[in-house]
Image (cartoon, rainbow, N blue to C red):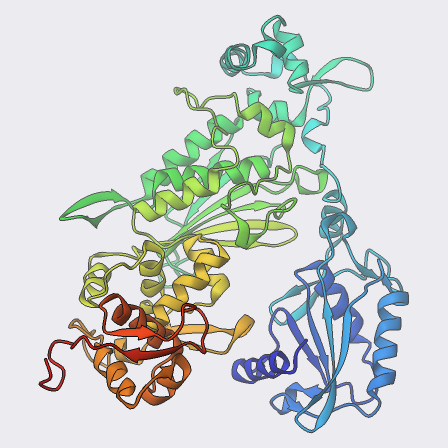
Amino acid sequence: MHEEELAEIVENLRLVGSDVSDVEVKKAEGGLPRSARETLVAFANTRGGTLILGLDERSGFTATGLSDPAKMSSDLAAMCAADIEPPLRPHIGIHDFEDVTVLVAEIPELPAHRKPCFSRGAGMSQGCFVRVGDGDRKLTSYEVQLLLANRGQPREDEAPVPGTGPADFDAALVTAFLARLRTRRPYAFSELDAVSALRRAKALVRDENGADVASVGGLLALGSYPQEHFPQLMLTFVHYPTTDGADTTTGERFVDNVVAEGPIPVIVRDALLVVRKNMTRRSVVHGAGRADIWQYPEAALREAIVNALVHRDLSPEARGTQVQVEMYPDRLTVRNPGGLFGPVTEDRLGEEGISSARNAGLLRVLEDVPLPGGTQAICENRGSGIRTMINALRAARMSLPEFKNRVSTFSVTFPNHTLLGEETVDWLKSLGEHGLSESQCVGLAILREGGHLDNQTYRTETRVDSRVATQELRDLIARELVVQTGNRRWARYRLAPALLPAADAAPITGPRRADRRREILDALRQGERSRLELATATGLTDQTVARWLRILRDEGLVETTEENVRNPATRYRRTGKIALGEDGEM
């Protein structure tokens, strides 16, 4: 870690006023604290992180230093190697910081096939931790089992269900399923009878006595009533009257409370019906007109519900937990047991080529099982369900969902408001900025609503990649629409002060952007200058100067003294062409 990056980390901690999810600070006045072991384990089990020894959080992250940093480094390395399983190999550095010496250890996240990480002294059942907020939380025995199961491909969906057989399947679903199999995969299924085809699809498996019984996945996908064997493998819908749940003033616990049972195709159909019954319609701006749409786009809801039912944990420990859909006045949440599986992470959801299935057998069956009364298969959008969800929300001009991944649960929450509503669209038009991308408009709308942005949040909310996010945020800075605080990993973005209305004042609606041509040209009157020199002379940011230099070059008003315009040291000068309106010269 560079000294500048350490300074930025500490500056951010002082600004926030507490540790953050990927940085932990300890004073370590009396030697290496035992609690460091929990933090090391938690970082390795979550997303990695940085441990800083020699700062005092209680005194505002004052740099107190270490009396013997070399011994501290040796003790920390020994703890990582001898006290933690699997052993960790963090990058440990000793730094001079604010006239004292501190120690910085950077701990990478362990790959899934090596988790869980745990303290050897406490053992796996008691010594596993994850990072939650600014603290370390001990994992439950169920969460530990999940991490162990995620080392390979879970097979709970292929487990036999004793006491079942072909008679437990829904005849209509089986008929539709086999017809699609024989049409779409004739090489593997066209010549097989019904039982043989169900065996090959793993909907039927052999029990310990060699008899044909339904698999867990087969029963959930095709069974006439799976809850006879698994009472809690269902979906519950609750519509709460207030944002906090029950209405304490009237005693009203819920507006609606419904249980959806049956095979997954029936649960999906019934869940969508009950959500639609509880939704209202809203008016949004589309071009020159308006359109009435549902409170939440049905395509987005469908993908969220299907994902929850298909990718939920099916291990015996989780079979007592149902998929939950909760509607509040300001949001709707879909939650399932079991976090994300495989290489998928929250910030990579929806990316091309990023897909992983906890219940691969169940998913494969549902690719050929249609919704009751329709022809579209339940999992027809395999690998693109999240993108379908996002596209549906964008088309409705709504905020993108919030994904929360925990070891034992995964949830998606849809905010109940139109991010790009009529007022916001009018505000964006009033800025007078041409060429803004849709993702830039979304970013500005988030900031206008009081949200915050960093590079990761921008990528998550707009679903653009890191390269595009960096370019678009730089362009917003250059346009003087946002300002940046911090650098690199600690960079944060907020609306430019000129876009913020005064307290109790109406929002700014008039043109706001200054034309910076005159300032750049005036600064070049004294002769050739580099971009940095122009930024110093005008008081503008480097990005803003670069933007207006491009415009002036395109207009033929300035030129470079060399070919490489990407070099910050490249110098610029005025041309002989006169800019219209410049001090009476034109």
